[in-house]
Image: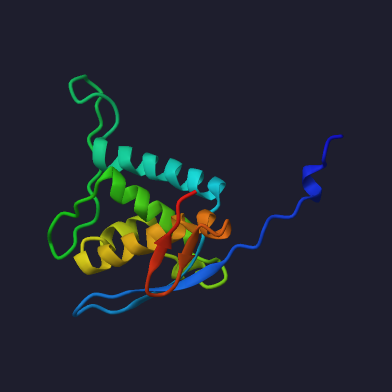
Length: 156
């Protein structure tokens, strides 16, 4: 018998608080939620689009019609460095922002997160948050224990 998908209920999504800290910089408080597979796929699609725009450029550099990458905004008068992996991390964190806490102008964009990554201590905190967000599914299955101070992973 076929199930009517409109009658299904999605599981509740847990969220957690995360503070990005860097010496001499303001603390940045985020409320993040564990990202569903569909949200992760959408975030990676957007990341790929921005990588083409800001890192690779459009087309083959050796062929006429190549469009070079659009530079990211400058920071402290210097160019901003970003990689495909940085864009993926930023896109997942962007998708993980809780809609209850981060709305409209209070939401950080993927580019905002790329800019924040230019400060090593923020980047380190963001990588920890990315890992925590992505471990959410294993946490739900009881394979991961996540606390404010540590992440413990058990094998399947």
